[in-house]
Every structure is written in structure tokens, then in C-alpha cells.
Length: 93
Image (cartoon, rainbow, N blue to C red; front, side):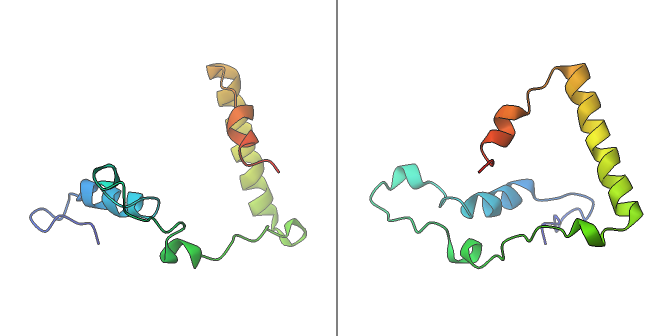
């Protein structure tokens, strides 16, 4: 959808970013402060909420993949000194 018509090996990145940002806010909203913004947009409101994965039904390969991802995150946290608590607190109920 975002392939450059002049060069099929390239992507129209600014068009892609504009489409992504439109989900959150209309473009150039700061120039028209009187515009009423509908939040969330109808497109975003119709997206189904993610369901939690039933781990009892997970295959051993899925469990191994998740454990490997967690191990990689732990390694990066240790080596780079990242603090993920602040990031995850935003989503913690």
C-alpha cells in the first residue's frame, strides 16, 4: 500500500506516518484549535480488544519462544541498565 510508484524497492514513509498519526489526532490540528476531535476515531473504536492467550493451550514451542524473548529482555536490561518498570507501570492496572 505504501510502495513508492517510482521505485518499488522504496516505501512512502511520510504517507505511512501520516496515516498512523491520523488514528490519534488529525493532521495540523494546532492550526485549527476550534476543530472538535472525536476520540477515539471510528476506525480505532471498532478494533477488537486483544484477548489473553490461554497458556494452558500453548504448545511447547510457543512457551519456549516466550521464555527466550524474556531471557533476551533480561539480558538487555542488565547490559544496558534499562528501567522497564516505568514503561510497564503505564499499562499496569
